[in-house]
Length: 254
Ligand code: ADP
Image (tube, rainbow, N blue to C red; front, side, top):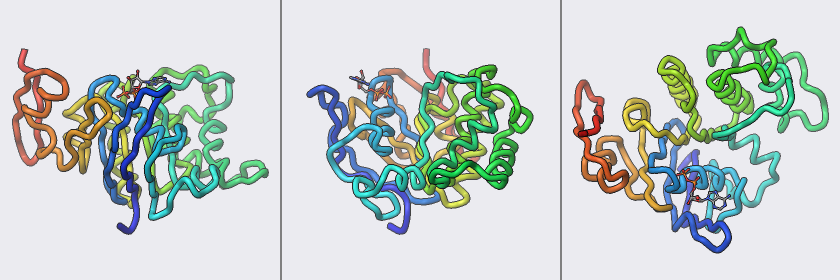
């Protein structure tokens, strides 16, 4: 594989309790992969392992490099991560928060004019250029998510991991985030995100990874993975699936 992520035989335990069991999958550069699965199935744990925020057993290679053999600074240049929850502690200016994503490139120097120009450009790209001067503590939940996305994008990593990037967003901003991620993928970046809405996953993903109890139940194209049977098996709910113009739409049967 030329670029992307290769995860092989990944296991992870919290206090003796194994959460991830021999997880193996690849994501190629230029693909958007969505991880779906019920609460507690191990999605966040998997993303944290791929970013080495947790220390798993098994192998993770990014663009062919074993990430356990590189420094945390090198890893930060290769893998960007947008966490699910984040409570801003200080009233930093939004632009400064975004520019802080350049830290892996700055060594010990201060950000330069070009870093701020890049920050403004990326804030525009995610539709919140008007917030650049605002205080980080004065943002809505949705605006905060977009700032965190901008901070990850300015890292210019080849791999981007996002934990529920559309949570707390209204439908317009959900579509905005997913379109921004599509644009990122078109530039050859590998994107892996978690998402709860199977319809948004269907519309935007190149591949879907369906998890249950810390294992991959299915991985592949949307229509191969998301079927009435697999959704019943994983979520225990009945759905109907409609296909139209190459897209599929999933509706719960009440
Ligand atoms: P998901 O993202 O799919 O909701 P998580 O990866 O957050 O699932 O959690 C997977 C399992 O790991 C759950 O059973 C959860 O209770 C457990 N878990 C998550 N974080 C911790 C932790 N810090 N300590 C112990 N167990 C945890």
